[in-house]
Image (cartoon, rainbow, N blue to C red; front, top):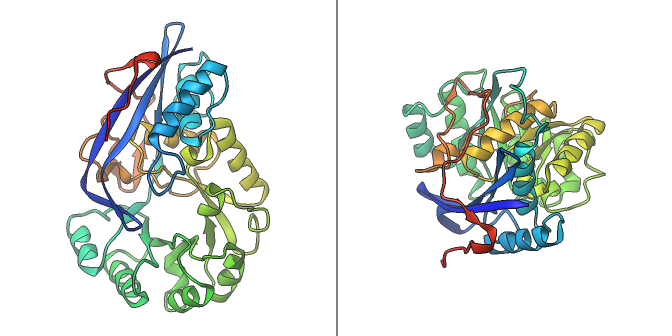
Length: 338
């Protein structure tokens, strides 16, 4: 396989917090595959705190996979390579071929911070036009979460709904105390709030809100009991944590079998991958809800020109984007020392 790589390091506008760590930049590798006269591109960028592998692990698994004509063992590498292969194919799948039937896709706004940050974001117009806003909860005091949530609800129109992401931090009792003080009509869903995902259905029953699974899928936990359980109606899928595109398709299909809708998201990937995932949402029949594709604004530089989000919608260009980078052959490629 004719595979070339280009290293990138994209600075954040401000440090990006994952748990107790602060990231100053987004590191990754762009792949370029040549098939005949066609070029295809894919991104390999494991995110610390999300992916189990490092970038070094991913690149090593790429070398081994190419040498043995196999699929890379690490999900981020398998995803990036399959994207490169498909976008170079004569008859690509996953929405990478012809222009999609729809010209745009819904995207949720993303917010992290407190009441003061919420007021500043609103004043800057960062919530304008969005129908859904994703907010992290469970990191600090419940009273602070409530103040922030109520502040945002007061700032935006009554038609805007919130997605509350708990990152498996709360107990059933703590989540119930927090959520029972909110209007269920203003909450689209609660994403993985509980340490024990088996209690999600019970939490939904107690507070009258839809639950979503995320980490349960990407950590490889058994999701059979939750898929389609009462009140657990949404799955949030990050393709680069799943693996090759065929595996992503299988997860979306299984969700449909279980009666669940899929929200596609990225792990703060560059705008190239965001553009591909937007197309995948249509191709896989997962365009019913807004998707988690609004993170390009966090980056001060990018691999392609970011697609603007207007009134909560992201346009999908008929032509696939092309990263303009300095590529070198796999045999000659070396990651810089960090």
